[in-house]
Image (cartoon, rainbow, N blue to C red; front, side, top):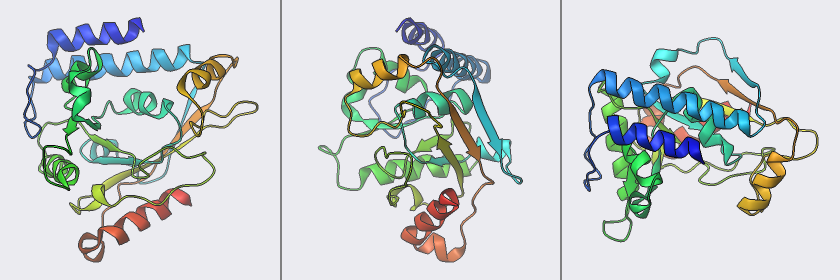
Length: 244
């Protein structure tokens, strides 16, 4: 827990001022952004270590480009609650959250500090989430200095053995995406967060002497004109890449 408080203090000191505008993205001076990103990566990795993930295996598929990945939307499967910490330790991306999360002490301020996208479906028209995601993706495509966006296109966690159909919202913009596959090899307890309450899940996870996780980085997926015109086709093809 103290890791969260420590990062909260970092964001409080070096992060942007609070804003209620979901479309506004605070651009910080490069040195302040570097402090927020690097400290977040280090603290996320420390939390993973404390949870038993002493080693994290990184697999790079030929053609992967780190620079391009950091200026795109990261798409990965969603297996566990640990996925977010893992991606924070790798890319320190931003995420999509409900508007109500903004007012939660500690969590809301941290999400604001990493340029989180807050969605309020009760106050805005249907499809607002897609519009906000698309706007952030356009900013990334233009080369603006914003953190990479991470999406879980399945929309929920799975058992790690199969991948659910992808939602199309993150593919509407037609911009390239960075595919990442996450796996949790295990012997006794599966870190997959499926049909289990949070407290028993965390206790079971911490009861293991060591947990294992690996992530596979694929080359940037650049959609064809046909895929740009058909988000459903685009999402299916990216899912196929991750399922292979």
